[in-house]
Image 1 (cartoon, chains in turn red, cyan):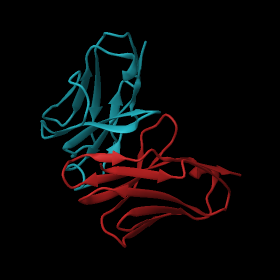
Image 2 (spheres, helix red, strand yellow):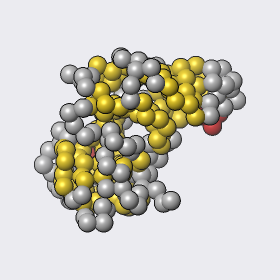
Image 3 (cartoon, rainbow over the protein chains, first blue to last red):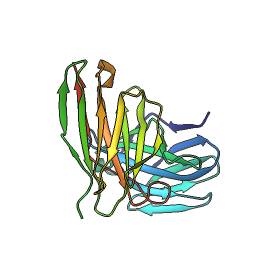
Image 4 (tube, rainbow over the protein chains, first blue to last red):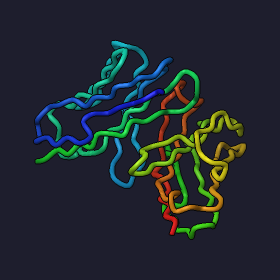
Length: 110
Length: 114
């Protein structure tokens, strides 16, 4: 069965303390991996799309990387405003839908 | 450029009733997908429409249905509401549907069934 697993479930960081979030997947025919940020009570906000192993994308303090089995979202020198739930989703080759992980709830303390 | 608009933002319905939710995609986007988000199950795919045609459907009962209009606006309907249907319903729009483009989400409709 195709699965997407995110770890850790929750992460607390001090402001400026860099870390990484993990998204591992056991799917066949991966056609894209997406990262979203979601604030409480709001819809997910698009961050990145990665299509092939070795690909990297950056946006401000965030950098996403992709291997054949997992993706990492690196957060460099986070600020309190980076606090949110980070979701990854994969797109399977066989169907036009996103399969989401359960998310990592990130809290950045001042 | 206006984002994805979902209406209403909040709804309270009684068990057994039906409900219709609306989604207006980003201008020029032809694909609209619907997702249900609950604390226990996370985000789960309901269905996707492209040019008024349902292209894919998730594993939900037939009480969940949708449609798309010629202007790409979409509605989803849930009949005979159950308590377990309480959730945040999200729609996502993209130009052609994933993986051909990023999907952008609306703010969601919070449905509470009592």
